Length: 171
Image (cartoon, rainbow, N blue to C red; front, top):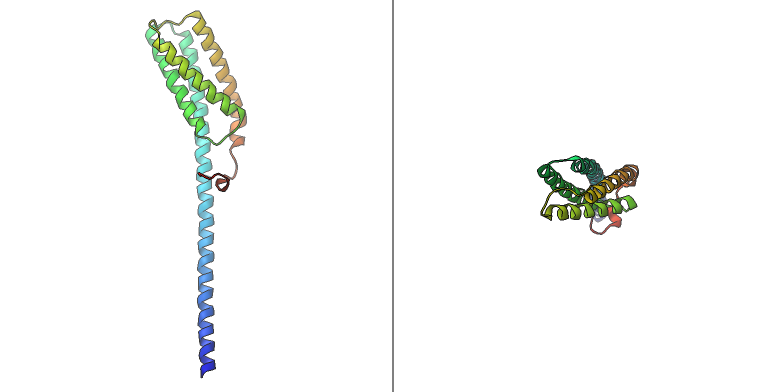
């Protein structure tokens, strides 16, 4: 009788351990799927931010070109103000990306300079652009176009196909 009870206890214990093992495996599979979904969502967010920044960079360049062509002081002031805010938006977007390509650093630096230059132009008493200002804006527009091309060629390929949050402590 004692021997049959021990067999029943062992059978019950093994059955319970088997069920626990199946549940643990189920949780592990669900966690892995969740991790993949979060990694995909993060990757999509990075791509969206990069594409948005590239679009804003194009808008920034167009606003610089418009400011150079504008003859109206009020319109020039509005465009220069927009240049400053667009530059800050591009800088913010690119700073949020985990990319280390040289084009990213150059673009952030250029946007910082554009934002500062726009603020300096707006603080001048007369809103008319001097020939020196127009020449500098033309150079900045050309730099924007070059950086935009560099971002397009470097950007999408530099976002990791599989985000490695395990290697980044604050992910």
